[in-house]
Each structure stands twice: as C-alpha cells, then as structure tokens.
Length: 214
Ligand SMILES: CNc1ncnc2c1ncn2[C@@H]1O[C@H](/C=C/CNC(=O)c2cc(-c3ccc(F)cc3)cc(O)c2O)[C@H](F)[C@H]1O
Ligand SMILES: [Mg+2]
Image (cartoon, rainbow, N blue to C red; front, side):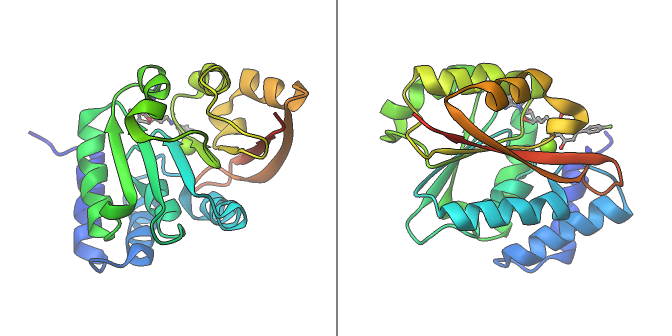
C-alpha cells in the first residue's frame, strides 16, 4: 500500500540528515516540506520564535500537546539543559511511531518521553505518572478546538504555577478564537502575540505566548 506523508518525511530525514545532529533533522524536514510535500510542522519561521521562547524560559519541566512527526519536539529538546526531559502527547499511533524514529534519529530520545493517548485522559495522570508538580513551559499544537478545554484542565489539575509559560501555535490559521479570547481577557494570564506566517507559506499566522499569573 502507498506510504503516508509522515513515512515519506521520515525517509527524507534518514536520507538527508546526519544521525545525532538535530539541526540537520530540522533542516531536512523543512526542505522536504518546502520542496516535496507541505506538512503541518511549526516550521522554520515560527520555529525560530519557539526557539527564542524556550531559550528565554530555560524550562526544567516541559509539555507538548500534539507530537505529530516530532519536528517541534526536536526543536525544543535540542535546547533543553542536560538532565531536563520533555513530555509530548500524541494519540495517533502511526504519527507516534514516525515521531519516535525522527526523535531517535536526532539523538534526542533520552530527552523525550512520548506518551500515546488523548490529552484529556493523560493530563490528569501526569502528576502521579511522571512526578511532575507544575510545568514551566507548555507548547500547544494539537486539535485547535482542544486548546481551551486543555488549559482549563491544566488549571484544574494544578499543573500551572505563577510564571508558567504557554505557547500556542496557529492562533490565526487555522485559528483558535475561543482560546485567544480566554487568555487575552482572563486576569490569570498575561498574553502576547508573535506575528509570523503559516509554515512554508505567506499566509498570516502566529504564536500566542501566555504567562500564568496564579
Ligand atoms: C485532543 N487531544 C489530543 N491528544 C493527543 N494528541 C492529539 C490530540 N489532538 C490532536 N492530537 C494529535 O496532534 C496532531 C494534530 C495537530 C493539529 N494541527 C493542525 O490541525 C494544524 C493545521 C494546520 C493547517 C493550516 C492551514 C491549512 F490549510 C491546513 C492545515 C497548520 C498547523 O500548524 C497545525 O498544527 C496530530 F495530528 C494528532 O494526532
Ligand atoms: Mg501547528
């Protein structure tokens, strides 16, 4: 049967990147998406903004919602301090399988815990399963209509602390209107928009950074 786009992306990484070199994995995926097949990775432009926020926060505890093929997982994990691990949630087993291989190709498997399952089930389990009290940094890039319910779940589960940073992809395209309205109007968040473009296109998109105020 025909291969899937994530499988073709993995092949492009194995062909064009250098094993153990995260930068080359990132470049190989961006090259594939610009020259072969578009895919919904955060991409290089928004990825640079993600890099700068991760570097600024220098988090000890990190959560990503929506691994997909692991592109942003590699971008984040390559910047973490030694000994720091990130947890990434992905409920599609086929995507998770590709992501594991791309993360491993980058040599970052020891810095990543990929958990297969839906965020709504996993978020309430995180404290006891991973011994995490709160997250310093959370990257949201899963189904857009789940951003709002999931940050409410973070609040209910006590997973945020004063200063926790949430960074959300696609707040313009495809768009997350309810989420934006909430974080921009809630007294519990300080929010800022980083304008950019939809990955590999000229369409407007951007990232919203929201700091939890307690
Ligand atoms: C709901 N809970 C979940 N738990 C665990 N894994 C999940 C959950 N929900 C989804 N996943 C997992 O997270 C991923 C979902 C990513 C969704 N991303 C997008 O749709 C998305 C779409 C565009 C886009 C823009 C313009 C256009 F013309 C076409 C597409 C651009 C983007 O950057 C995106 O991120 C994965 F697929 C799914 O299994
Ligand atoms: Mg996205």
